[in-house]
Length: 139
Image 1 (tube, helix red, strand yellow):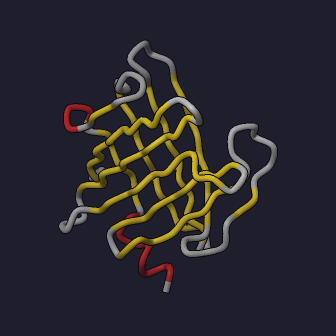
Image 2 (cartoon, rainbow, N blue to C red):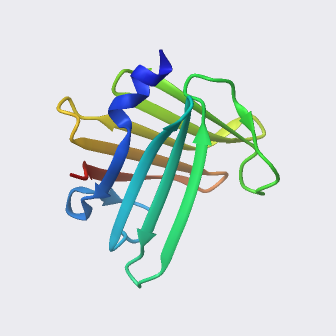
Image 3 (cartoon, one colour):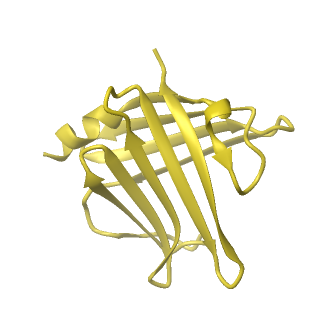
């Protein structure tokens, strides 16, 4: 069942800036990632304080291993999908015109205490950038 597969990912995660690597942008001063299950829908909430003190709050949701979800006119992406690559790897893909332009792979450590998020952004006709954010489970 999907609920069993998502369960190890649920909770609040705190960014370990020293263990993270950013190719694009400056590392945030602090960040949290909260993953919740809302009746089979995975809800991701990200809160971040940038190096210069700016606060960013963002969220998205998806059904793991469900169909691709068409999005409104955000301008950047028009569809999102969320799939389990395996029991310890949950992947989201943001797509535009059928092409994946952002991919986030969330890999859970064997002990369930560390979540490594490898996010790759593909800028058409420019380059690709990868940020690796390491999160520790909040107590």
